[in-house]
Amino acid sequence: MIQTETLLRVTDNSGAKKVKCIKVLGGFRRKLANLGDLIVVSIRRVKQHKKKKIKVKEGEVVHALVVRTKAKLARQNSTQLQCQENSVVLMTNKNKPFATRVLGPVPRALRHSKFMKVASLSAGFI
Image 1 (spheres, helix red, strand yellow):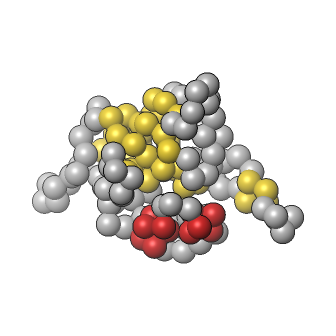
Image 2: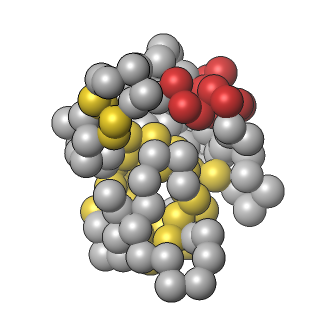
């Protein structure tokens, strides 16, 4: 579960390393985000590259999609999914990813949602 002020890891090649959740999108009085939810984040730390152009800057406010959480996710076939970290993929305001690659696996639930583009950019499914 992700709430405001949560520090998250970025799992794409947009140039950001760490982000902080500002707001959970999706309705009145909604306070927690789970897998597949959109949140608004502020970029806290970026990678330092001399040759590559970084797509985002420190302090910038962007949307993000939650792809992995530490909280357990129960599936219908009685299995549970739990990841090592909380991580997100940075998105534009039109719900398209900033990056061209998503590092690490993403849950299968994203394959059947409106974020099929993120699922196709990833390395595999959990």
